Amino acid sequence: MATYKVTVATGDMVEAGTTNSISITLVGSYGESRQTTISVLFLPGKEKSLSVHCGQDLGPIVLIRLHKWRLFLEDAWFCKDVRVTAPNGTLYRFPCYQWLEGVTTVEVREGSGKKLVDDKLQILKEHRHRELAERQEAYRWKNFAQGWPRCLNVDSIFDLDSNIQFSRIRANNFTGFLIFQGASHFLSGFLLRRSSWNSLDEMRTIFSRTQGRDIGGYLCVVPCPSS
Image (cartoon, one colour):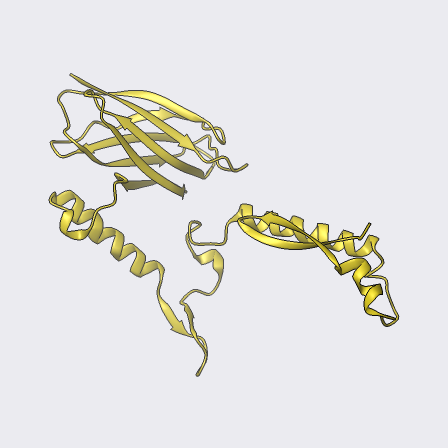
């Protein structure tokens, strides 16, 4: 009997958790474990730990499978990463950082960074080929118009996988930034102004001093009233 310690981390975004059932399968160079349920409740920013019992040593863990299914309502889950500790104490890390939606199974490779020539196992070669085919399907291009740059071959961003779409969290941050900027301009009299500027000094009362704000990973410049 070989026992593996597994820790699963959920992203810290507000909507990252899920009430859907999540289970895991460990895949090693000597074999794979049975599918083991992790939990049916994941909270944002929290970790879940469990033990996976196997009849024999699986060897080096090369990838994991995360299985998501639901009984009633769909509840997407954002997996941050998974850490697996083997019976001999070896720690394997599996960075995920993606949304799991619907009834699905996602395979995640061990995060040591390997090239194609490093894939000795057939299961890793097949995983790489599947991943390449999925990316080629997701990132198809079309000509929008003659002389224009090519664009993605979709009618709407909602046709894209949620991991490709612009981050919902980042979009909310930008919305908040626009509201803040509009309120600042309103309070400083900029939005209600009907006449021309009298001088550059008058403009500087609104725009002369700035404050940097980090909005969803981007550094934005927000006007601040002068003191």
